[in-house]
Image (cartoon, rainbow, N blue to C red; front, top):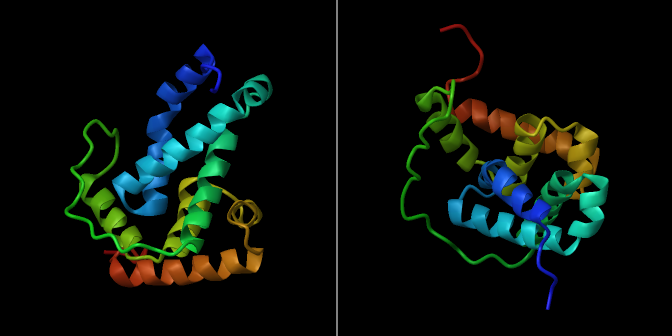
Length: 165
């Protein structure tokens, strides 16, 4: 039986879960899969908490764990899942145009999982090509090619190409 988590772990989970869920949703494209991904990553973080709490790198550990779990889930045999509907819009998101968010979310969901992961890590998480490659366990060249393909596809499915209106 595992030791109960320290109060620091509880605070970490309460404070960081919303941000982790946003990143996980962008990676998976599905709210339920995102919740599963975050829960699995937090379970692993809990097992390593005493070591992480001292070092202060719990969030980095949790995010890296999420990315590694997502990659391992891609490699498993997939079970076809069909979304039953769109997620309701979140309220209270400051400064974000709801129409733009919906357009970007829909566009992200058109990408294959690896391309979506590269886009999330590079642009949402602001990671370098090398960091992205390391987190996903691929080469920098793969990150570059997947980014180029993903951006090209995003340009075709949106009219957000940067040209003047």
